[in-house]
Length: 270
Image (cartoon, rainbow, N blue to C red; front, side, top):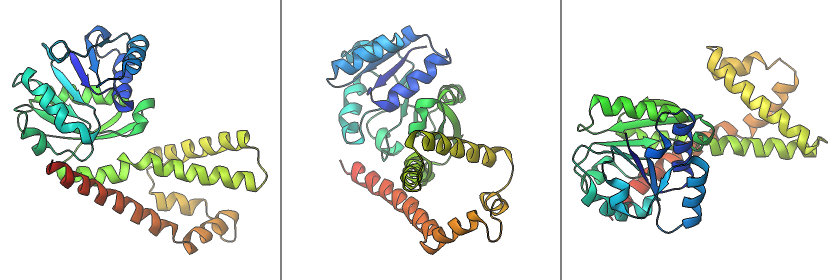
C-alpha cells in the first residue's frame, strides 16, 4: 500500500509518526510533499525514512490513499493540483477544518473521508472523528480506522456533527492547556517552584483523565466526591462558580463550533 501526504505540517507529521511507530505501513511507501519548504521535507525524510517529492506524478502514481493536510485556505489549489493524477478508486482523507465533503466532491470524483483529529495526535492520544461519502468501501473505511487509531481513538459520526466536534475536541487541547497555564501561574503566586508545580499539574491532569475513563462515574459525581463541606475544594469551586467559569467554557465551545461553521461557509464560496 502506498500513502501520500499533500501538506507536511504538524498534523501530517503526527499521522506519519503514528503509522511508522506502529509499523502499519512500510516507511518506503509513505510519500509527502509541500509547497516550497525544503527544510521541512528533509527533516521528515531523515526522521521517518519516508519519501519526499515535489512531483505530483511521483507523489500520486499508484497511490492508494491521499491525505489532504494543507491549510484550509490552500484547499482549492491542492485539490486542483492532485485531480489529474487520481483514479476513481483512490481514497482521499481530508484533515482540513471547515472543508466539507461536498466541496471536495465538487472537484474530485473520489471516495472521500473527512477526519477531525486534534493536536494530541502527536503523542498518540488524539480524539478523531470521521465522516465519509457513499463511494468509500468497507475495506477503505476499515483501513482508515486502523490508520487513524495509530494516533488515538477514532469515532464515526455524521458529517453535520463535525463542526461541533471541532469546537469540543478539535480545539479541546487548547482549553486544557489554558487551565494548566492558570494552574502554573497560581502555583507561583502561592509560593511553589515552577518545576515542581509543573510535575504536580501534569500528574493531576493525567490522574483526573484516567478517573473519568475508568471509574464509570460522571464528571459531576467525581467532582462532588472530592468536595467535602467546608473543605478546601469547596472553597475553590465556590470561586469558580461565582466567576461563572462553567458558563464561560460552555460559551467558549459554542463559539468555536460557530466559527467552524463560519469557515465552512467561507470556504464553500471560494
